[in-house]
Image 1: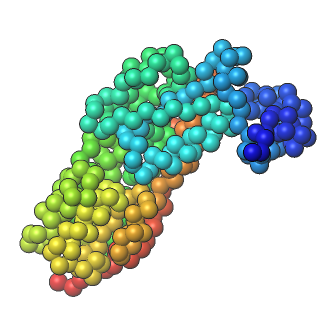
Image 2: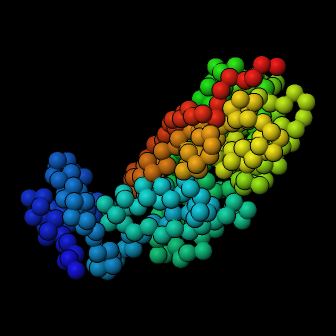
Image 3: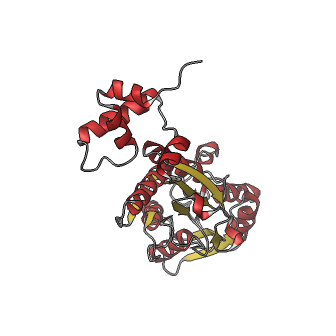
Length: 323
């Protein structure tokens, strides 16, 4: 078994002293260590696979250096990359990250973790807001920018406008919206942006983020006179349900019906035809949120951030069929 790298190994590779490595990886280098030296230390640590011994450090400092990440579910495809981005930044700064799921239907999130054991909270897409974390610093992700805590968001309104513009350019005017039946800021904003893009011509049904539920909602929109020529779905899982509804009615995608999703998870390319959707920078969101929380812990108020998505056009969209 290979020997676990130490801070002395990092110092040797970076060409600095061991104390400099400790200062940089403890997040205390601002104003004390040159930026190029900090970069050399971080690159050496990544190359060697070095991670600080958090338990030993915490004993010395009398601090936990632990952050709580609260998410609606552990199985949602977006939350894994959010965790990965946050964990990488946390590890570089000598912090640990604990994940705590809080389901959408469980009401306002209340910490069931001993708050004395954590130093700050990252909370993503929590329905009803976050409460009962006392005086702990909190950074919200994918949440209402009007919240009292700093917010790091996806530009979901911009993403939905990009979808609407794409469909309008193809010639679609009758639009169906299969909306997520979740009372969260991110889905309210998507619905508002789509309604603004197609005033007076949008029909909507809500569904749980579940393929079977989405299929039923899409059937209600499609099995009617003057059916929509395109279905806009609040996420890629909902779009999979729309595909099933189209097939049940004998509709070809995209010949008879265009379908779009949101998130660009792995499912988007597993569908046939592959799905037009919005790619969200989930890992970047987690990293930016962890960076913002570290600023809060350092006594600075970070600005709000809105990260743009990218329209990924695939074969599920085409001009509408002639009447």
